[in-house]
Image (cartoon, rainbow, N blue to C red):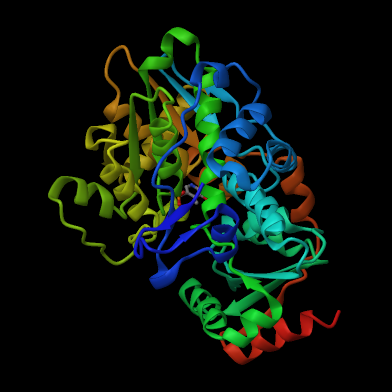
Length: 427
Ligand SMILES: *Cc1c(COP(=O)(O)O)cnc(C)c1O
């Protein structure tokens, strides 16, 4: 299947080309203009890996054989996404059982597989900036992958110690740089790399960032997994609430709906960074300054996947009433965590935002699903403060928390970063 640049429609690329390139001309996002026909009932009867292979193979088309896609999916989706009952009317789809305990493992690990195919054995260097969860997912996904060097920049002292330990303790082909600056400076350094044509060409540098189409496609699969776990008679009543930042996750859910998956409605839940809820009401797109909140992975005021939502609306495969946009403030986020705790369910701020938004939206007779995007232990301090009870670290987190970090401190300065990149080639 060909993908079209949403800004420059004359630019059409194959799936693997889009994976290699990330963004198109004028920073345009790649997106399909038509969708395959799927046999939904047959798909829902399959286990996760087989079903996801069929979905991804249909989306990718002839460029990869179904056997190749099957091998990629089984290497990427090595953990479950259980639908856990929380109240009589609501379930949590737990997406945090991967190696870095956040849903970004699904997209990150499939992207690593897709990029390996797209590079066809050429040596590649991934350079990416992270404010927390993405860096860990990318690092683990590419760890020990032959021919791939990964360089991750993060703002020194500005991410949680546990988040940091999850990717700085790997070593080998994962180089982590603690930048003396904030996240915006890290991102600016990465952008500078891509302005250096010679450097990008010589070292075959790719950013593997969150707008890569392979990540989005991978995320469609767990919406099918959610519906497959519902009793058949409830499937037509499912309302799904997504804790949203860059809106990749929500876009994937809308695509699942466009492909025919029975989802009655999607609830886009945001924290105080409410550009989308305001836009939905007023029709005015007016991003404010980003506000720091408890659900920090959703602190995004200009969501970079939004043009893809607009494209789905323009294609007519999703309608305005399929999406409800709900803002949840900080008090309500804490209340959500407490309400969930009263139900015997331990959660964290991101899931709590979705839960509260869902509660506001849900009508009698409907079944609500909110996405659990991170393991509560990843936000140990906040969770303990809000709920007043100590929580244990899962084994994987406890293990890396005790390990030594290999990070190297660098100033927020391009010359130093360039030197690091050039030296990687000599090892
Ligand atoms: C990245 C992230 C989100 C936001 O997902 P988007 O696809 O950017 O909307 C929500 N929760 C957690 C824990 C995340 O890491």
